[in-house]
Length: 376
Ligand SMILES: Cc1ncc(COP(=O)(O)O)c(C=O)c1O
Image (cartoon, rainbow, N blue to C red; front, side, top):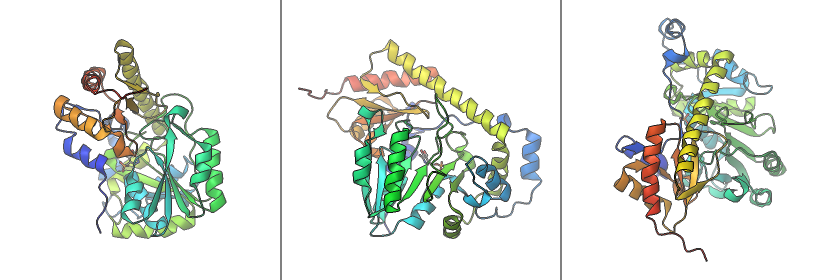
């Protein structure tokens, strides 16, 4: 079966190591494990343990540590996966069948969207609107979710805008799902990476048919461990675990053991606080640059995550803008079209000040040279 390429990921894999400045990422710089965990604890957890297959679904300890972060959840509500990517994949494999309809928020991380399209499932975009500070229009939620809707894919906090869904929209979305019995697939990898304000509440516990995906890749800045998870009802998870038998059987035993240490409550909170400070600081670098320059773009400040989604004023497609920028200025950014909305670029922020400012200077020069949009 042919699948639709995940263009953003393909582009990053092809060029992120080739350019002078890579602004295409959406992660916080990763820490060394030795900075997070005592070497004795880590050695004991990994070197003194036989390296068999980790239990499919995760070790009881890790599942309990994850469950402790969710309202009224127990280990049976958790399934560990290879990154959030596998969590999203197995959820989609279980829920989506030909003839179904998927409603998905855009702009967003398009993994499930692309898979659904590859599988011949009808996909319907539900737009976050810049004029509403990247919130959904409540009437549009009501209109988009119909009896045909099998699942609604969201990413909250959102990649790429950094927006967190407001209470009114959240309620409208849950009500709409409940009315038609649709699943909510909630990718929450940026929960805990809020630049300001309180921690984003998980959709888990708000409605029965919710599957949450998350992992250590973003808010924890540990993507190399490849630990992700699904949180959901016991029955649906029992049905989903066997899908792993055809993917990678299970995840890596050393990562399971390290993740258990990472998620010990004190350490977990310390890591998240450290990473939030990085997100805040890196946004500060952007704000400082914007004050000192006349940017040829505009943006709504992200609430969470080390990235922002900028609007440039030109008729030229975001793919062409990004390609020109890469070829002429050796700066890599993600074109908005690869996240479902043209006319924007996603730029990553979790970077040292000098690097970010130098890259923004080149981005700005390039954008200033675009012919502006004719606005009557
Ligand atoms: C919203 C979102 N979900 C999932 C992933 C993939 O996560 P992982 O690295 O844990 O597989 C990413 C990676 O960028 C992401 O941005």
